[in-house]
Length: 370
Image 1 (spheres, rainbow, N blue to C red):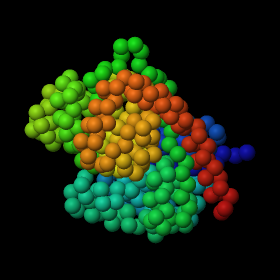
Image 2: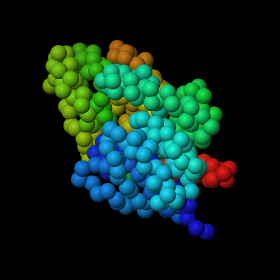
Image 3: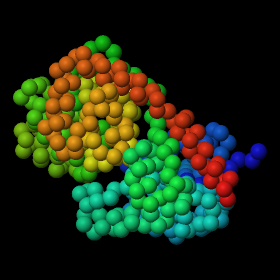
Image 4: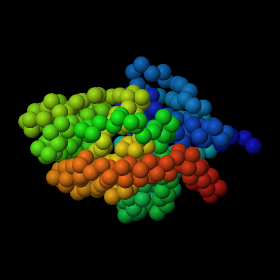
């Protein structure tokens, strides 16, 4: 049987310096589809220092267009890519701004939308850029209404259905937990809190700084490690200085996979104060090291954190509630052990093999319905 030709569109690829959870998702699924005989090509925007064409884990990578204008590149170039590559199906992985592939090709399209920014974008970007993203997202119900759309969590699925999309499938999210394991004796630091992810305004890291400040009177040695890159670091440094906790906050910048796992293993609690997530990959990664998570009770994170089992969910922006839950874990060894054990069990349920199987089912159903 001949291989199925698949064209996957995403703003970034795994080697992009700004790659995040969406890029990990695309890579893990593409690698498994390629292993099953699919002929896969990923097209993402060009990056200085990376070749225009590449191979990654059995699939091809092409890089064209700019990081801020890739949606226009897709709009202009998709018919040419289709003519050249002759894909039998296209995955429109609209991470950031919708790529609107269903309007640019007659080839069967399946969407992949992890989450939409909604009004959250006005807290992150400049007013003109935020308005642009907001208006672009308003095209989603029109463009993708009758197209099969995959997403990664029940809350994201519910949001897309509320927008009027008719064929939304939760294919789940996975985690590659090779190398992830609970810490050895004495490795976990009883005073260490961890945030790992992009350092952007919409991630709400101000809340974590206020949480840390509220914990200090009861836990005088507590500190916060922040791992990840982003443009909000200077402002957060100033906030930490104002709160008098600058010496308790360490900004690591982007870290390697080994460094990331080491941080997860040493942390007593991982934190996530984001306003909105597609799911919350870092929650499961932390759980893979037996580290409980305290996070905002928002779409995405409410799916990746099991309240009272693998950590706690608190109202977004409520640093007092977050401090109370974190303090409870730091002060109660029996509770911490319970959450650690439940975290390990929960993480083990999320595999990329399962996500790839569900994705392949959606793609094959779309091909069969042509």
